Length: 211
Image (cartoon, rainbow, N blue to C red; front, side):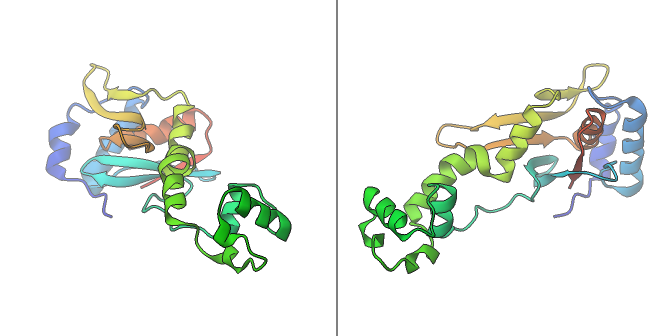
């Protein structure tokens, strides 16, 4: 999805964006000039890096972060083999342990000597519960980005220029509303992205921000 910026939007908002809470004024001026010249966002990423922090476009001037893989749709249900190994810590090469697990958990239709079902997708309700809880809270790329960013000295909330005028936000959400466990970090305002990349480098983080 395009990240091109409206020149009109930049002229309206850019006059106030002469500094940010963690962006030196010279870098901010460079980011501003880059926006004017290229109608795009300047990201001065490190040449070498261990992690990639993806800024996934959500709406005009809004990005949601994911760590080491782009954000997207929920993953399709994995196989029973994956589930038993990753979630239940069962040795799937041991038929007796597989059968015992199926019987102990009242999956009687699975408790057969023929374990070909191990390659089938897990039940829909079981997978849905996993997505709603462990995946949403800890294991999704978005939740991992939140855990990463919230553990750094970045702040949470408005990003302001030296005069105190807000130019954007970096917000952490630990379940945005009742009924949703989705954990994620979100940026609002184009200048927050070059500010964040600069701050990551300043903190010694080997992380590249990619839009």
